[in-house]
Image (cartoon, rainbow, N blue to C red; front, side, top):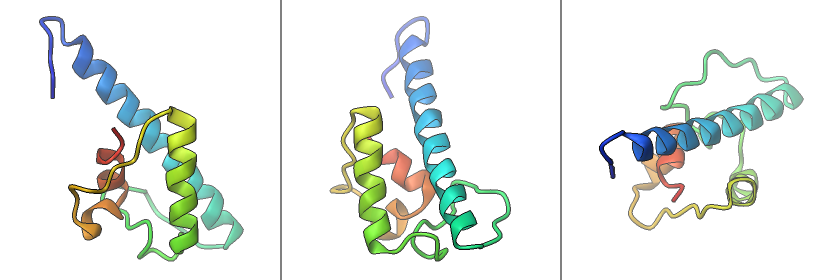
Length: 95
């Protein structure tokens, strides 16, 4: 991660990741409530597709929603599918 003397870049990048993560967690909560799925605490290893909350079309919609909301690209080209389908892995793919 790039870092300047004051750590401003690191702090901003971390803030952006937290905002993206919060956005996705909110989407997970909304979907799970509609589906009447009881979820515990949502951690970085939460499986977006394996949990039953998102099917493949929902996952594609999530990608578009994140890209539109944050004006950033979601790039999975350097990631393992088992990794980017988790909350933490997905957030790491937002560039």
